[in-house]
Length: 152
Image 1 (spheres, rainbow, N blue to C red):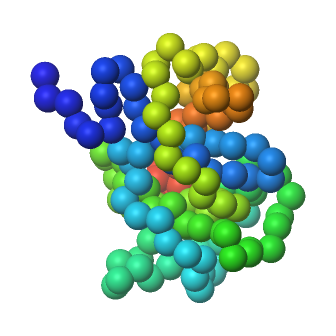
Image 2 (spheres, rainbow, N blue to C red; image 1 turned 180 degrees about the vertical axis):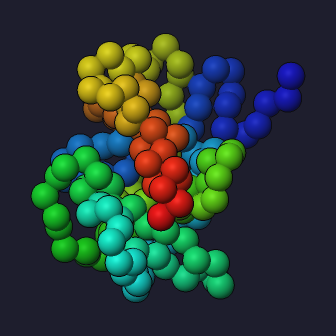
Image 3 (cartoon, rainbow, N blue to C red; image 1 turned 45 degrees about the vertical axis):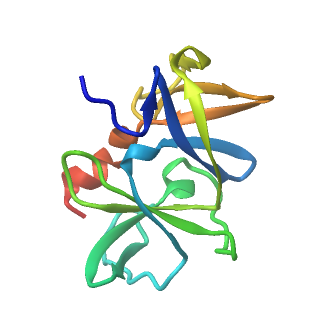
């Protein structure tokens, strides 16, 4: 079996992002790029957590505001605001707006407790323990499923 560079001996790497005071982990294998905040072109009649699209090197990419998707209060964009460009195996690239990108961490599978408390069971895979902090591990497919099915 061939291993890719994101899985080493049962451990995976995650990009840790912040929303308010909470930390979320995104499997690094889904990350195509991380870009600074840029002009977002609004799309009429889109979901409230979908501010619009960006033009990234000639490619039009829909952008989702993760704060609004998770029912957090709207926050003005700052110098630390970033857009994660994710590309799931099946689907087009999608931008996810986050407050801040923190670091890359490696978590062993046994350090992640499976989520049994996520209401829809869609947004979280589990919670990882890293040093003295907890990181909610996002289920990228669940987070962007609605956006993919509506084809924005």
